[in-house]
Amino acid sequence: MSAAAEALRLEGVRKSFGKLEVLKGIDLTVGEHEVVCLIGASGSGKSTLLRCVNLLEPLDAGRIVLGGEELTARSVDLNRVRRRIGIVFQAFNLFPHMSVLGNVTLAPLKALRTPRGQAEAEALELLERFGLADKRDEYPDRLSGGQQQRVAIVRALAMKPELMLLDEVTSALDPELVAEVLNVIRELAAGGMTMLIATHEMGFARDIASRVCFLDAGVILEQGPPEQIFTAPREARTQQFLQRIVEAGRL
Amino acid sequence: MKIFLIAEVFILVFALVLAVLRSLPGPVFFPLRALAIVYADLFRGIPTILVIYILGFGAPALGLAGIPTSTIFWGIVSLVLVYSAYVSEVYRAGIESVHPSQEAAARSLGLTRGQALRFVILPQAVRRVIPPLLNDFIGLQKDSALVALLGTVEAFRQSQINVAATFNYTPYLATALLFVAITIPLARFTDWLVARDRRRQLAGRAA
Image (cartoon, rainbow over all chains, first blue to last red; front, side, top):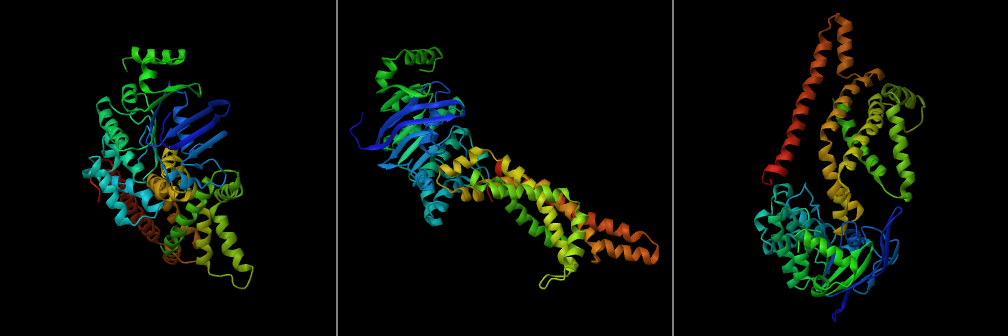
């Protein structure tokens, strides 16, 4: 796939909730600086896959290797691992009782024990970069959805992750707010951030992805460069899915 | 007054510990969880006055060396034991009202379970339960009159003494007013606290 060094490797990842098997053996490799987009219908397992990579959901089977270290080994300290992986959720999940600056500096202060002065300086630099410096003292509920999601991205970036997981980060936004968030992600991609993105924004996926994976019923049915997936999908299920997207006017 | 202020401080801390114990996940913590549940069931079930009698008269009567014999001490202990059971349930309701996605967000940033609880979940939980906490606070203040049964002279006992001496019931009225004079400002104060918090999060700039 990619000539670059491997950042993340999933091997045979399985996950069930009760009797429902959501992930039925996922194999996926993401190279450094690669942007991989996961597409697929709701319920195909995109979000679960991201939560598994972050170890928010324990796996039933399979291995996850990040930068050469197996995360699924028993001896691994989950907290230390999660500091290396940033995740951004569909519903933002900002901490409503803290200011923007408080949200962004909490993890560096507590998990990394960064001195307050340094943590705040770094947070402000990031907020500045994403046009949020004037919001530093606002509380999340005072911000627009787009601003909240940008804060959530900054909060994840403040931990200087080597991998970012984005879980349908624009799905909860009003259409006119989607662009500002997508632009932030484009900037991250241009800066060389390794990303695994679950998305319904097909146009965006086509622009930004180095590779697109189509998830269907818990397996990666088809993957390849966006030109190929979006113009000449091989699998019937992929064709069907994209056909529906086109009919809905979303591509 | 002293009785319920001292008791309240211990209750707020002890109840929080109980609530946190009860929210611990996984089979490893089952004994602790069970302990917290049994505790809450037990002390919510026994009438306060019975606990006060048992400890207030019973404990000193054991005559063990090193056990305090002060009725105020045992009165406070009884109130702490009983009210912590109620207040722990209030805290627990608050903790459970915080959406699991908040913990997921905190843990995803690499915070430990304890850090997530302390910096993300409890601050939100406690803010939400301030009004019911005040409810228990007022109940406690009123029940502190029960400690009088052990012979400690507090406001209610003092008024009984005065009534008995004069057959004038005004001291009861005065005592009632005294209680209300404390609870009403407290109620307004918590209203103000809650409103200020809401203003800050939804409509205002940070302090």
